[in-house]
Length: 125
Image (cartoon, rainbow, N blue to C red):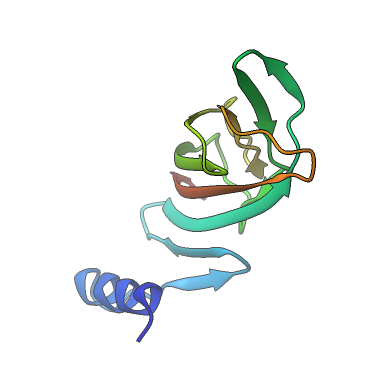
């Protein structure tokens, strides 16, 4: 059983059989009280868009959520950029998606792998 399947099974048991849905990179639950929780991992290869020595700035494409939230949700993100020292910062997510922004000491003209592990919580109704 994969880690995500084990997590989904555990969540279903904890939430009284509430079904964990999946869509593209996302797993999510929509609670009857209007709160939704979704989580997923996005990976993209990009080159940096700005350099402020010794750091290089990176931005992912817009990552679409599995559904549109009724208000701007809260996003919790862990971002890794290549193999160098990096950190994450982001503009506030929209109701339909977000891009991850970060800086790293890693630069490569062929592009580096950017991975964003995301947990999004907000109102779906």
